[in-house]
Image (cartoon, rainbow, N blue to C red; front, side):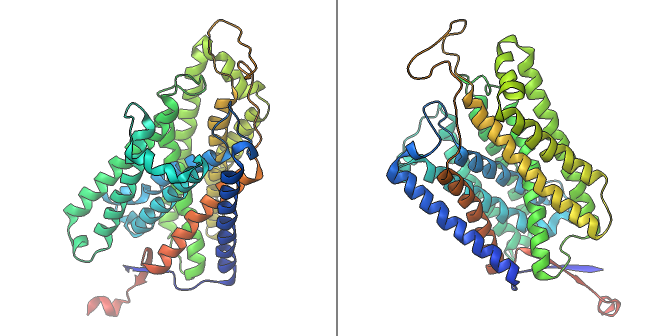
Length: 405
């Protein structure tokens, strides 16, 4: 019989130190890139008047969506009363906060004049989903932080009611948060590639998948450092099944989104652009999101090996799901803006401001460094948290003699 305790990450192997060092370098490069774009202006990026959200937004939205899904395990444990997931609930919470902070850091540094963030935080237009998202994002950190306190404080954790209430609050908040993020695009009626109520459930399904993939990868990495098997064979099977279910759900909502668009004749142009004739965007969609990021990892998980092979398979599949997630965000965010605005339906529009023309975008190096820097910042927050506080499970096996005492 195993008794559950929790541990900090006390030992770092040379390879893990190298990984930390790489993340530190990426954060420094990301900050340098943000300073460079701030001093030179966005003219040094690939963004333009047609495509105002570039590669940093792809990373940012991907991390924010993943943050919501990283809370999966904690929610399953407390809201749906599945004790098998309880050992991973603490890690789930801190990973959710770290991913959200990393994503928001990218957004703040990419906006230009980050010193004016205080204006955005004190002046609201509640007709805009962006204003609501400021509350949703900051509230998510507070709610999950309180949830972690309820799990980790010795006295508070004794109360099942408190844990249940905090777990339910965090679960509802994360659903609202992801709905808000998806609604940023769903409410944009001017962009034909967006403007769909399916965006919200599509983003929720994406968050489930990407958040769990991040959790699995962190558990694999920390298992090597602790030299302990943090994922039992039973949990490995549960995570594998959840990944398959979430990926199929995301494929379903992706298909539903495009079929809904194709039903209306006025959207045939934008769908043909994204799926067939848009150059890079159909390639990223079919090869990046569907083949590499969905079908291939699903097949790997279905025809899995046993033991070490099974762990290697779920690790590779999780990585592929995350690659597919970045591809999905690239097509939604960049591809959706590249298709021209339909300013006057039924009319041919031309002007010196490139109205009616396909927008061209190629990400610049500073954009890539800023996005990757935000990702590395999230990973450093996780490592620091694991080093300082007991977020990782430890399964202490009791000997028969101990059990009889």
